[in-house]
Image 1 (cartoon, protein in one colour):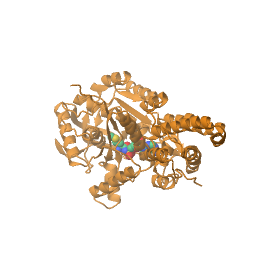
Image 2: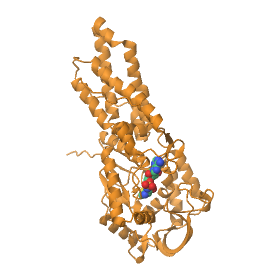
Image 3: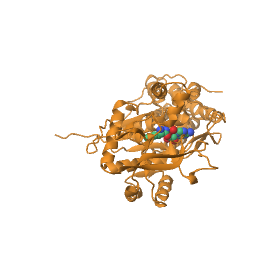
Image 4: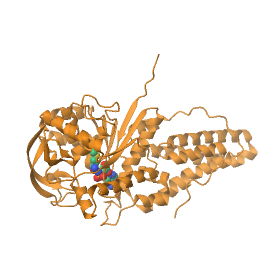
Length: 474
Ligand code: MSP
């Protein structure tokens, strides 16, 4: 008997720090991952979509102290906020991993023991400048005016006894795998950036434990030390699919097909993370896709600048699907994109109220009483497949709007079907058939991006009735 096997597709987001509530940047990555997961599901793949929260480390320990809460209670509360936001945003993940899950902690300890037994980890000491915002040591040349450019703080000088992970012995292999795209880093410029970094120096061994951080997973072979938060965090990509720590037996979802990350965490994802896997003898991820940051008015969003746009405010103002659309269409996925409330309102009115919304009501109204034949299977246009496979989400949206929605609106203006209805019933039928077909296609293509809107359009096509999908906003 022939058994058809579905192709698998495993996608991850970074796990988010729970030092503060989720914001628009977290939503951006997670919505993008949700869109890609939904698209691949429609391609009939066996999809696994993992997201979650990163809950240990100094940064979180300090925030919990500030809030006067036990760290566990503190992380429970914020982790819930992430979950609630994802529910609100119609994110359909398959698992939400938390690094304080007992099962995850157990596997992290198991892996550290394996690495130690293999001789990949050894005891030593580390001296460097530590940025608690990044939870990373920074080299002098990464600082601007002595400060971490991402967090605008002066990193602390630290020297302590710790355990280290050997980096030099995997360096050549890592370079080879990145060069050949076996471990693909994309878009291309990020691959080049990482390659030039890897080729310019001998990698320093990485400190993988901390002596003075209590809020972490204790090392199995030294109870005075806790696991460095990034080591703990990376392993989520394996524990999140149910891995039990046996390097000879990884779950069928592995290797991960796409790992979405922001550009600020590319370096660690292209060095420490593959180093752990290479030492363990586990296949590397197939692809790391790096996106840019969302800026507000040209600057990083911050409380001090008062330029932060809250994700809750966006959802309240625009609704869920429009929020998903506005974030993903704000600029090329992969580059920094700048958003302001004014521009989003403009875009909402132009693309959604006037563009898509108006088109739906016009077509549905024109086709009232029109008996539609059951539409045959629509073929997905080539541009869409290519863009979606390349994670070019903004590109796909741009073409749906530029080549389909705008064209339909123009076609209506040109053919004036309301006149044809009286004067040329045959032509009228032809025009309406084409419009109904196009609208059906548009709704199909929007399913991953705007699931609820796509459903509403389908229903409207059947019932020939619709409410206003996107009321104009002032
Ligand atoms: N906990 C680590 C990741 C561990 S993954 C093994 C972390 N967490 S984070 O919460 O600080 O950031 C998570 C992701 O959110 C990163 O990919 C980061 O780039 C993204 N964003 C944070 N702010 C952002 C914007 N303003 N715009 C777009 N994404 C940004 O790093």
